Image 1 (cartoon, rainbow, N blue to C red):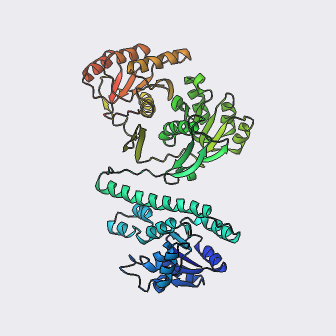
Image 2: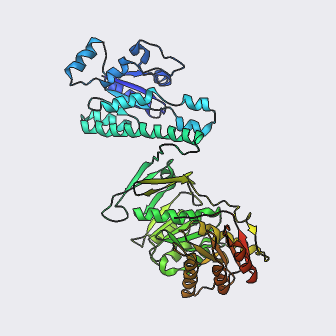
Image 3: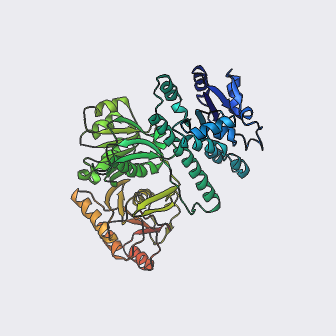
Length: 510
């Protein structure tokens, strides 16, 4: 029995190789792996002794040889294959242990294209694909996490075709994701990220109980180990809908740096937001905006939930709380609620992935784009268009309103007063209706919009929205500008003594 080991990631490989030797396998290896095995007193055969050729071209060619691939690919139950192998002295390779050159890691640490090119693996993917193709006879290991399972499976005489088939699938996933990253990297470098083909690759994290509805299957995939590193379940189980709602709430609360931000969300839309001196004050003020919608909602806390905040949150039914972290006393408070779900990021503040790409499924395909990002200085750099200038506190409210509006479904308008959201209209077909809806909602819960800041993620096409805002008592407005009627909007603002700012940047979210 023979095992070929050639790995870039050498974690766990020494123990694995020793176990294989104890099971009677002869080890064949290459380059740095061979050196490491011999340093640890593992008797391994140099691949050149098998191929009868030395490694060539600075290691570019090592395993591309019939003595290697013949040993992997010949079918043990095919008489002709067996006779051919015997005729040419090809010895079967029964286990192949390969993971690939660190291409992704190399691109992160250097812009030297020659170095990047040299970290495109050729022999490795070929070994993996050959072994996977002949999974009926060969075990292929591409992940160090599988080493222990493989050893135990062999020891327990459970090396079934089903077991090897599962490893085969993992192997093709391994090479597919590797090639996808290379193609995406090349397109980003030479084609502004837009190639003839676009590859979106995620790593499975968990299966959800179902998708949006019970008859649908649901699964969470991640980029760059984001959820593995930044998502810890403390109580309950995240559903498909929970995860999408968490995403919306986190993007808003996490976009305010180290400030004590709290966002309450329902069905992916914010129904409460505030930034106060403490998280408790922020939550209390956020809840005032729409306490009815908050029932059964999702709360994102940009900080650590303590006992005092937990007790306050526990006064109503909340389905999900996502926070930087939770004190043990806070978790104890929530233990009395059976249905609540708690998720932590093991951090003092919320952590956002800030993905560079964004895409959306449409019937028959998907649309793809660079991710939209609300820069911290967009409000600061906005252009004053009116005679009246906003006060310092009004500018703070404008910033909050602007960020919330930019991260909420269009058409959207947001009213903020004293660093707390007092009204929001989102996902409307008319911007005027969005403004009216927000004012109506505020009145229903007894909140005053008098003196508030108003933000719209796109320009106001007519002055009627400005006049309506003035009637409600709005004192400052921020919007992108760019309408053919901007002059009318400015005139309306001046007539109503409203401070008007144009950011020059639209943030539609459809």
